[in-house]
Image (cartoon, helix red, strand yellow):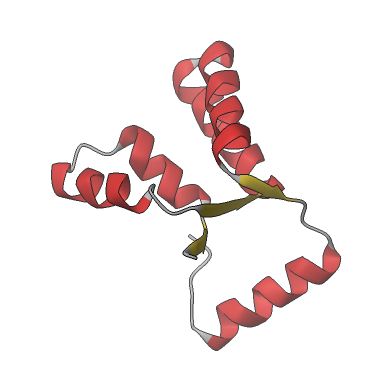
Length: 94
């Protein structure tokens, strides 16, 4: 089964990108069966939508995330493992 963890950048591009090729790639990516987001992503997507489109839209976007994705609560252990993986694979913070 195809699994993936999505970060805030994925949703920022999905909601606000004007690049048609990129949007097509993102739409194809959404067909995965097991999709995960962290509680941090919920916060960041809500904040981004709140600042750009207002509270009602922000609430709708978060409701969509909660319906289509498994929300993983981030605790200190997950945060440390995330930092280790970012270091190992030289991933930026944004």
